[in-house]
Structure formats: C-alpha cells, structure tokens
Figure 1: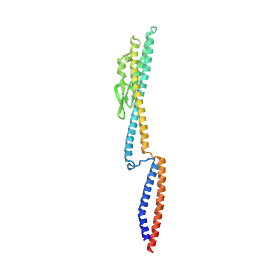
Figure 2: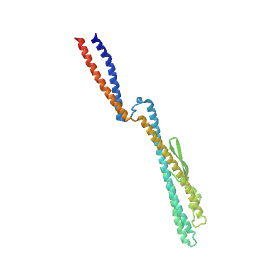
Figure 3: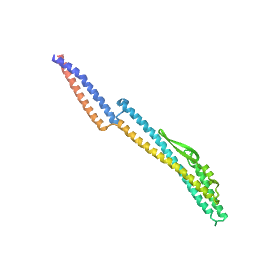
Figure 4: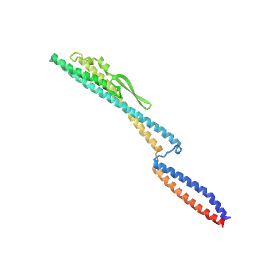
Length: 270
C-alpha cells in the first residue's frame, strides 16, 4: 500500500515539476531575446500598453525628423536670399560712391561718361543677381510671394520680394549718376534692400527657433521611447540567471522523480 501511495505522489508531482520547467524555459528564452536584441518589447504581447505608447512616440520622432529637414531647407533658402541681397547692396554702395564722384564739378563730360559706364555695368550685375538668386529652381528676389516651411503641425512663411520691380520703381535701373536726384534713388534702394534683408533674417531666426524646438522634442521623445523599449540589462541578466537556475533545478527534480518512479514500478513489478 505504501508503495502504491508513493507512486501516486510521484505522478502528482511530475506535472508540477514539468510546469515549473516550462515556465523557466519560457522565461529563459524571453530574457535571452531581450538581452540579445536590447529591446524589452519584442512583440506586442510583451507589453500591449507600452507598445502603443512606443508607436506614438516613434511617429512623433519621424514627423519631427521630416519637419527638421524642411526647416533646414528653409534656413538654407533664407541664407541664399540674404547672400544675394548682400551682393546687391555692395553694388549699390559702389553706385553711391560713383555718383558722389560724378557730381564733382571738377570732372569733364568724358569723365562722367566713363563713370556712367561703370554704373551701368554694376546695374547689369545687380539685375543678373536678382534673376540668378534661387533655391531649387524657385526665384527668391524677383517674385513677391510667401514660401511656407512646414514643420509638424505648424508652418513658417518666408516672404520673398520683387526687387526687380521695387528697385526699378525707385529709379535705380534708369539711374543717371550725374543727376541731382541720383543719391535719393540710391539711398531709397539701400533702404529697400535693408528691409528685405531684415525680413529674411527674421525668418531665419524663427526657423532656427523651430529647429531647436524640434530637436529638443525629438531628443525627449527618443529618451521616453528608450525607457519603454530598451532592455534593463542588469534586471534582464539577473532574471536570466534566475530562470537558468530554476530550469536546472526543475530538470534535476524531474530526473529524481523519474528515477523514483522507475524504482517504485520495479518494486511493484516484483
């Protein structure tokens, strides 16, 4: 009777030992995957709530990356426009110097004609610069419009001027450098150019601010996602070691149970 009771005990304990071994094996595989991949969440079932938060953070990170590229393009556009305006301003400043020289009463007509020729060459160069200053095929200085730079849900408008028209209205392109009103036309042109340069500089400053905000947001989101997704190596390693020990213990107990069962069956069979 005692032998039969012992056999029943071994049969009852064996499933518990197998269940413990299976649990240890599963946990061992799970921690091994976490350690090797560096990810705490390798499938949705690992953490359903966490994976949803992680997906949302990844979406925001990707959107910020696109927005940041857009902002960098906008910043490059503003820099190119400012470079073109700076070149034009330098030429207009030279025109002013030539006009001051041409209005000197000691010069003769030949001298003034020579200075006018220099002025005309500068004016032609200014018109070339206006026509050639562009970004990705879009003219920046001879068409008045807004170029929207999209950054996430918000956008920044860069206002482009029509310098060809405004400087022509100022009388710059029909300039007689010897005339009494030449300096007025030139000074008015310089004022217009300064306004345009200031507008582009303001847009660039705004884009720089947006760029910093997007970068900070991306860093914060990446850190948050990392806390959710990344494996805590110390914890995973500890749990891996514990699962390994539990598995070894379960295997040892199973082996002892099998050996005991074999002994009992041998006695019963006698």
